[in-house]
Image 1: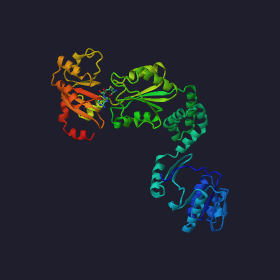
Image 2: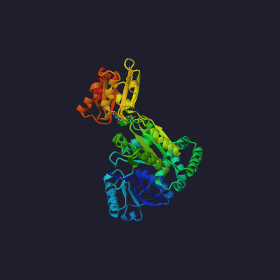
Image 3: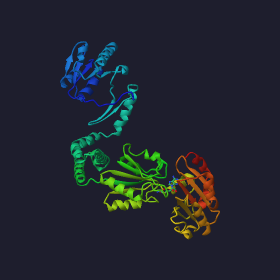
Image 4: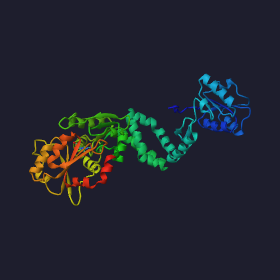
Length: 464
Ligand code: SAH
């Protein structure tokens, strides 16, 4: 970064402007807007500039520049068309360690003027470090159209309630959450629509409501199967507002990256039969964090309500009266099927699809094998890798053909996706041969054949 952007409070401070022409006038206008007291030094000064100097409570000095003109000034502007003189002013200011700007000579400047979008008290400053001021001005023009002029009023509204809200929420995170709600919700909508009085009434009501209740909220967010592009807009919005994020092993690092940068991140991942954090502890943690007033995102792979224990977590939240929202995600079956080119249903091959847990509790007894072998049905096994030999064996024993097509999709939708296809009888061998590991989804059914038929997909697949 060539220049550090800072916003300078000039109110009541003396600023020296060397030069009395058009350019000096332009800079002086900005300085006067910021409340500076102007000292303009030049052999001749434009009438408009004289007026500006007078209204700023400053002084006109009708002669050539001398170094003593710098005395008592907090900022120096050289705005003459005399290059040696500009260089002299710059050198004097540098020697005294006073910030100096020389118009159109970035090399002589210690500070530069950005292009400004003024929606006071909201200010946007754009700079190209003096290298491409036209580009900075074009960007400013874009921002001008993008930020409605009423944004300034919105900031004004916030300013009027700032102290009150600060007392209400001594904790900075809670305060930030409050203002994020205000700026992204109906209060901002009203203010931006020009209904300032209504916005103010709503804000007062919100403050009164918060004073009565400062419990946080839990968002159970489905993060999808891995590709960050598969997040929903709502998931992303809540992830960017979160104070704390509790995440699983299944949540890809690229997705975690999209959470608010300074949100606290807590890993509560579990592996099959190796529960890193027991479920009841996770439930308790969600409750505790929300009771501290935090906005908690519980980020889960796929969809929270499909083999995600989302149901258990919200039961606990409801029991403690903690507000929550559930954001659906793309489940592994949908994601993996799409990225592997296997339609889960097809009029010719499968009229239904069944999502089955492959986590066999006590050997083989807990799955309804007779239902699972029904014809024209696609089976999708989650967590099926360890139990796979038993699953294949039982399906065949209960009457599903040993030649039924089947697929293994490892780390589906991610750049590490691997897909292996075969039949029910050789699936376990495929796992051993290719060292397939979790997370892997198993799809069983005639629809798997369509992967080969959809030859175009191979090309698309390699780009995944
Ligand atoms: N709630 C999740 C599922 C959690 S169970 C969802 O809706 O997707 C965990 C199992 O999901 C894993 O054992 C694996 O079978 C499957 N899974 C999740 N993500 C996967 C991925 N990217 N690729 C393959 N399988 C995945």
